[in-house]
Length: 249
Image 1: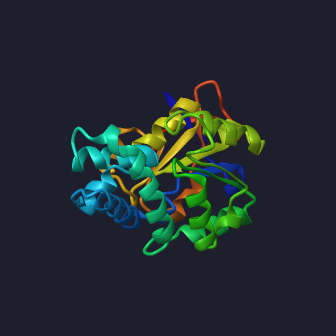
Image 2: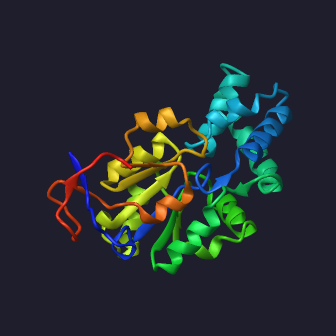
Image 3: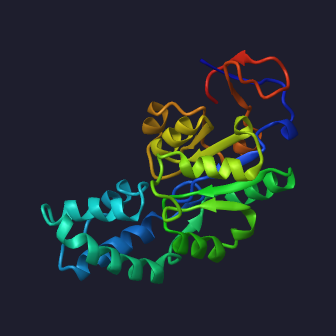
C-alpha cells in the first residue's frame, strides 16, 4: 500500500529529482540507431530497422550491441562484441548530436526546478563520455549537481546502487527523492532503492508498458513533474498533512 501527501505547496514537494537521460530528457533514438547500423556495416552485417534498435536501448551500450548483433548475426555475438564496441564508440562519438535534442518542455522544467531550489541528478546506463558530451552540447550540463553513468558502477540499472549513491551524496532524504524515467527499467530501479518513480510517456517505451510497471506517477507533460505530490510508504510519511490513500498520478 502507498499514500500521497495532500495539501503540499511546491516547496514541500520532492526536493531531489533524479533523471534518466535517453528518452526522458533527450530524444536520442535516431543517433543511437545510426551508430549501431554503422557498426553493423563495419562488421559486414545487414542493418536493422531504426525501431528495432530503439527497442534495445535502455540497458547500456554492451546490451544494446549484444541485442543488435543477435538480431543481425545470430550465433556470432561472442565473436563480434569486442570489435562492435570499438566501432560503436567511434561512430557514436562522431554523431551523438546529429539529431539528438531535448524533449519538449524539458528545459523549462529544469529551470523551474532549479528556481525552486530542488537538487537535480542524472542516472543513466550510457557511458560517461557520451553523457557529458550530450549534456554539454545541449547546454544543460550546469543543471545537474551530480550524475552516475553506466561505466561508473559495477552493475547498471535496474541495480539500485547508482541511485542509492546519488541519494546519499545529495543529502536529501530518500522519501523526498523521485526517479524520473521512460522505461520499466527506471521504475524497477526506483522500487529496488525504495524511491518514488515517475514514468514519462514521451520516451522510448509505450504507455501500456509503463502502466504495467506500476510507477508511482505517470505523466505525459513535462510541466507536471514539478508539482508531483510526494508518495509516502506506509509508516514513512515525510511530513506535512496526514497521508490519505490515492492512485498514481
